[in-house]
Length: 340
Image (cartoon, rainbow, N blue to C red):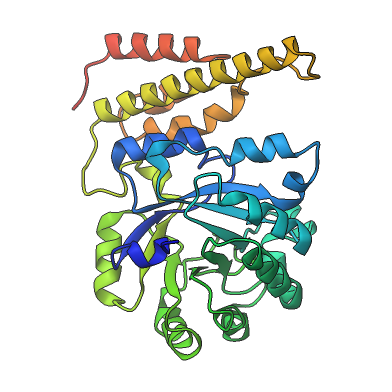
């Protein structure tokens, strides 16, 4: 099997896995605006997949479409056997690799022993990693942070990972404690590159944290040519075209929002149809579609930095469904010049 990490161009770009954001719908939006070289899914809990009750939800999170490829499945948890079970299933679901989350700072994830909490349980982290690797032919990578509490934890933690000769390691240049409250520690990139070279020069190194767009990536790549890839996370909220050098107009952004609504409506109808069919066959399922409220977190991606944006966004936050969103957008466009 080809190793996707060997097929990417030097200085490749990646959209960061973000809970409740990088789902199958939003990835299609980013692909339309200008896709990165590599996508990651949002997080999937290995123990959910291993349970009869949670498996359906886990599989929904792992849905992929043609515009996703190549895409990496990101998984998290703390049970080694559950890591093996999910890793063994991913190969047939359209993924080019699997990535283990050892950096998520969410307190609920950490309380469950996953994400950044694995930095403090390195033996368990390596056991989970090796169980996953033994169960699949897919290349295995890890996304992590500099440390849990202190920045200098990276001097011990990153070599622990590099010694495993992973396909790739993504380093978010902050600790779990720092969250995103301080600037990313770009000054540590040369030393991190040195650690990679010393312990596992074949491992691809991706840098994450405070990277906003392609222009910034091009600047960083010139300054730090040893880095293999660059990952954008929150930068996509400021500009969904961030993987290109294109500067979108207000019309572009509103068009992209309408595309997002189209995808949402199509997925909503698909889920309702699937669940209605299951119910007709005697299944014990609730006939429901996508929850509308989470869609609202995306509005600010498309509606900002123009006259009246705050007022328009406030109106959209009061909506109850996509029909109301479309009506308000249409009324706003009719009542305002394009401003492009």
